[in-house]
Length: 134
Image 1 (cartoon, rainbow, N blue to C red):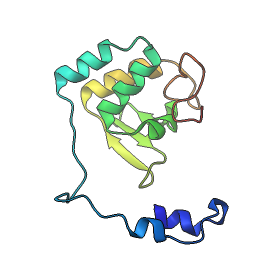
Image 2: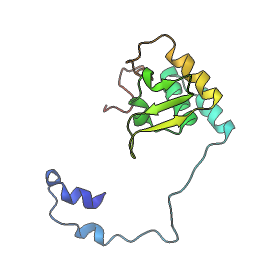
Image 3: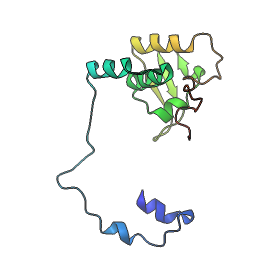
Image 4: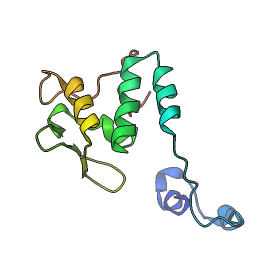
C-alpha cells in the first residue's frame, strides 16, 4: 500500500525511505482471525437501535460480505430461487454467495416488493448510504 502511495503523483511523495526502516512484527505470520460466537452476534444485533444498521450487520454475518460490498448490491442481485446473492464488486472482484435457508428468509423479508434496481439495503437513518463517504 505504501509503495502504491509513492507511485501516485497526487500524494506528493518523492521516495519510500521512511517506511523502508519499518520492521515487521515478531512472530506474526498472518493476520489475526477474530470470530464472533453466536451469542455475541445476537447480543450485538439486539443492541442496535437503528434497524437499517442491524440489517447491514445481519447481512454481513449471513454472507461474509463487507459493508461496501453490500452497499453495492441491489434487490435484483438477490436470487431467492437460486438461494444466492450476487456481490457485484469487492476487493477481489464480483462473486456469488450461496445462501443458507436463514439468509434466504432474511433477504426475502428485506426485499419484499421493492423495485429490482433499488438498493438491497436501505439507507441509514441519517440518509448516508452504507459504504459511502460521510
